[in-house]
Image (cartoon, rainbow, N blue to C red; front, side):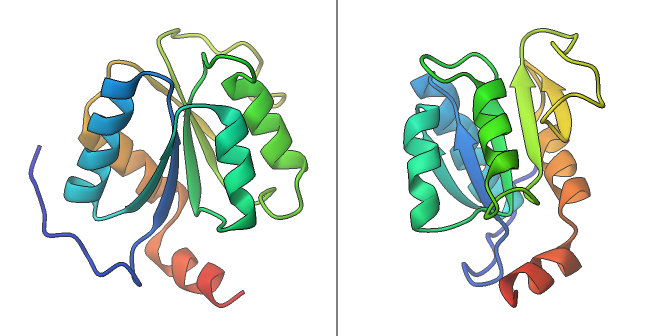
Length: 140
């Protein structure tokens, strides 16, 4: 893992990170900021994450699958039904190697099996939201 100087906040891709495990959420969030140069909003549950959409819409959502209350699958399904976020890619972080639904039925754009390297997560985020797409989304 290499630490890179963060880009300016105006140019940064925004990531919504949802994970109920404090240490994991804080570590992954900080590494996405420092190594990826992303603007990261962190949430410990799906309810708070969904509620934040009135303030800002992320470029990508990274969520743990197992969350208390509304789980990652339900959060993803709600995001896909919401006109504000139906276009937003959603990455599922899971300790289970096999997804619950088939790819055509899944609300997730991709899956990352935990534990994973931060470099793999950053690469997946960048694959899902190329830099030129960020500029288009900012002007939409």
